[in-house]
Length: 80
Image (tube, helix red, strand yellow):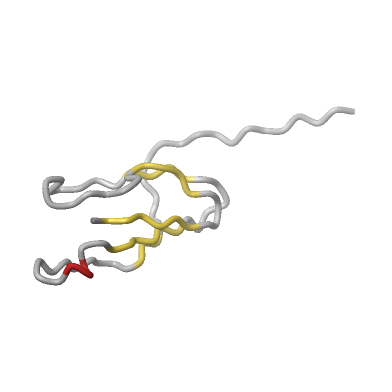
């Protein structure tokens, strides 16, 4: 007897996730603050796609602004 694997349904929409830290503070005169890391945690049993939007792209660069987070895993996103 052959069992079929069910493909998970793709659902579009917004889901809450955990982001640490909850805010970033950049200081113009302190270069050590010019590169900071956000950690995005996916608490669900399925993978999530993400996209980081920037309101002032001429001031900040988001490295790998889009991607996926495996179930119950986290990814680091660098902000410069």
